Length: 96
Image (cartoon, rainbow, N blue to C red; front, side):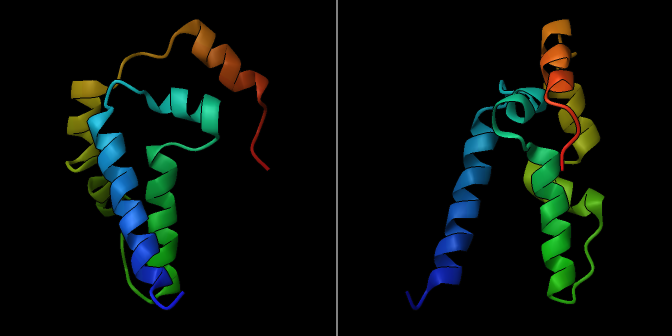
């Protein structure tokens, strides 16, 4: 596949668009179901930038993922985690 990087970039853009269209899905839901969330994507974005010799702060990466400053997104869309969500998250234990 000659254009693997371009395809992977398009897939990431589509994933970010999908997550943006599903603001009702909370990060804790993503963590409980898939083991990653929007914040994880932001951390991976920073790591990938570093691997390419570029500087990108975590806040800058979160703004790319959330499409606005995180604090604004959080105030608008993030609900308090329920006791059930927190229990499910805790039951999974620490990530390796």
